[in-house]
Length: 195
Image 1 (cartoon, one colour):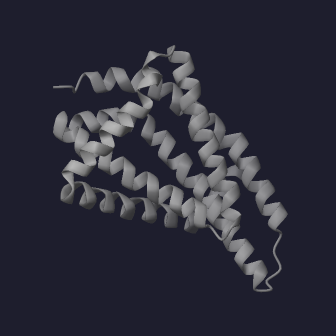
Image 2 (tube, helix red, strand yellow):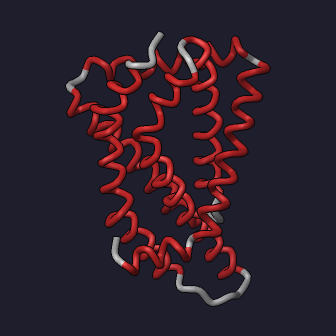
């Protein structure tokens, strides 16, 4: 990353931190929901597997492309639609946190906690920060929009342009790397921890 991109991330620190807190809080909620409703969690897992079972039949390169496209589009939506007072990125991050921990809790009982870590960490260490940064940019756009409605002069167009530029130059390439890892590396590592 260039110096200006590092400075841009630094300028987002409070928004990214907010998204990180939302993510952790939503993960806790997911664990509570799963613990109190194990039947509901298992049903959700079964529905999830049924909905995405078709992906397993595809060529690995196509799987990688679908994963990349899914993450890239959702991250872009979280960024751009954040202009609506930051509501969409907050809901996006919160929803992902809840779903992730519900699925992780059920799967950990079927296999093990180590399996869940092995199945999420290799690509997650790249993917999750990119999602949080995209959402953080969206939250900042929402904050700028809110301030402008209060009469504070802001360059909303410039903020959006800077966010999209950073998304294209940094987030998209790293999400592509994450999709490669998720398709070709994560399954090999996770397989070692299957019971």
